[in-house]
Image (tube, rainbow, N blue to C red; front, side, top):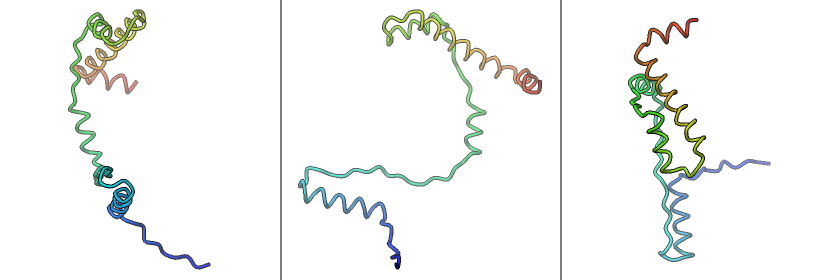
Length: 110
């Protein structure tokens, strides 16, 4: 059996054909809208730089965070209190590690 080399259609060609089909079937009331996707080069260096320069500014106290959560979560008071405490502890540890990087390096080496 001989295999044919079929040309893989371009995305714009497919979009045009589908648009024509939809306009014939439904008239002008239906249109095809597709997002424009352009390939981009992976830039791992830029990502690493942005990670290094990002500083976290989290200054809420657990009570303030719990009051904020009260606006969105009904009941579950114990869960909100625990969550607020854990979140604040997490961000305080990050802030402390950023303020003393040599302490972080010692911890990693051990």
